[in-house]
Length: 152
Image 1 (cartoon, rainbow, N blue to C red):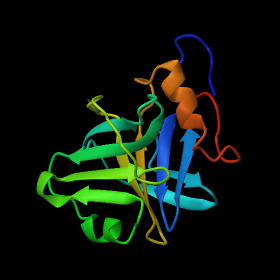
Image 2 (image 1 turned 180 degrees about the horizontal axis):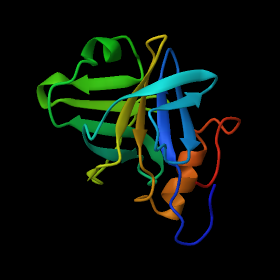
Image 3 (image 1 turned 90 degrees about the horizontal axis):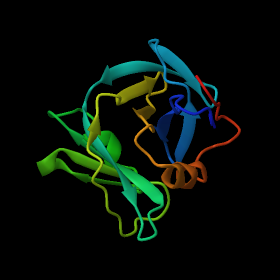
């Protein structure tokens, strides 16, 4: 974790495979990145706005992404038991463990992206700069620390 005052926090990458996995990496400025040994290429960015989902204690437990326009991931999301999607509202919720009560009202946008590996696995990228220190620390418990990198 980058604790330098004023320094940007790393981006959160959510790999959407059989099991959800979270990774913190410096903001990626190129067209590809490696997560858990898989190379992902940038598929698209600026897809909508997102809210971090919180439990009653204010801890981060998931992410809601509301797309600006129709996307082609509905079928992909359908087979993932930790994802809830609302096709009518073009919204998807990704829960880091079991689906539980959640609230979110961040409506951050502009730093999201969708990545895809050659094996057809998708990953979502969102920023973490809007989180306060408590929320950021609660997010760290879900991340794969072996693959997390700190700083930029």
